Every structure is written in C-alpha cells, then in structure tokens.
Image 1: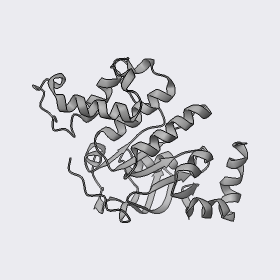
Image 2: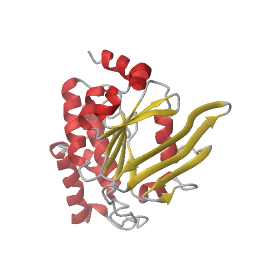
Image 3: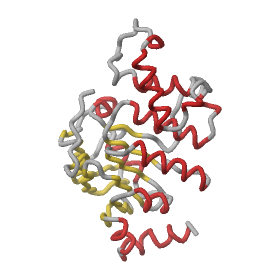
Length: 260
C-alpha cells in the first residue's frame, strides 16, 4: 500500500479550523486538533456534540464546509474515502459492518485483497494463495477468532462481531485506526475483551476513538479531547481533562455519575 511512514511524535492526523454545516445548522464549529503518531486519542462529549460527524469529515463521508484535514501531512481535500484508506487510515462504525453470510475467514480475506496486491485481478483464485490465507489466519489469531473461522459471521456473538470488524479495520495495514464507539452495548466482560483486543492490535499504531464508557476512555487513551456543541473545549492527558472545571461542568461530571 502507498502509506506514509509513521514517525512517533510527528502529527499523524491534523484538523485545522474544520467546520460542517447542514443548511443553517452548524454542527462542527472550527475544530483544531493534532494527533501524534503512535498516540491513543479519545474524543468524548455528550450526545449530539458532533463526534460521529467529525469522524465522517475526516474520512470524507461528508465534505467539510470549511477547513483542512491532513494525514501524515497530506491534505485530504477532494479525496474519496477509498483513497484515504489507501493512504493508511481505516475506520469502524457505530453499527457493525460485516458480511453476515460469509465466513469469518472470508470477511477478513476480503479486507486483505487490495493491500496484498489483488486489486482488480479478478482472474486470480484467492483460495489458492498461501500468503493470503496465512495473513487472514494471522489476523484471526490476533482477534481471538481463529477457532471460529468457518462460521458464518452473522452467528457470532455481538462482541465477536465487533472484534471481527476491528480485524477487518486493521487488515489493510493502515497505521491510523479510527473506532466509533467500539464497546457500545456491551457487558462488562465483553468490554474487557474488546479493550484488551484494541490495546493489542493498535500497538505501534495511531488510535482515534469515540467512546462513551469513561472506564474505557481513561484506561486506553494517552490524550483526550472533549467535543461539546461542535467545539473542542479541552484537550490533554486523562488527568488534565478529568480535573478541568470546564469539562466537569459541560460533560464529564454527569458522564462519570452515569458509570456508577
């Protein structure tokens, strides 16, 4: 894949004066954010703050009204989502995105095809490729689903389906991984499973996640940004954000109360 090298400490993702309006409704209002390569960065905020809209702007599902998005210094203006993916950024969604009738193995193998050089070579028989099979099995091993490889993906438990989606997200070799509420709707044991998985598969990668579970956020993130009504009101270490009076007033105090 055509990816920029990830140099720890240098910006992997930069947002500059990013705005998004839908008609007269301004949803994202001048966001500036820099995420260092190798950092685990959480974006938190109340419902309706614009977190998913921000993800969609970064990945070009929505065009920005104003501002810039840069990936490893490359301006992403005018690029399609698949082009951004090929530059090294991959994301998951709030709603699980898998092929339920295909096997677990086939889901991961499909996600590997472009990065392993198959592209539009429709005449190749992928089942005969030892390298492709081994790469898919390696990912399945990483996400603890190797023993489920032949099952239809749709029969997996919810947590296993989320794990599979994370496997699909990392399969293309992206070095910037964006996860949108990866533990939403999970039990405590399922959440622990997914958090351990995220920690393992994003090692030496840049992670940007939207998450409501404050235990997950404070357990995983190196830095946290708080988005409220389309603006970042605070950004810093978990300790700094937890202690920030603006954050306590606008969001975090209520969110922490909900956890108990």
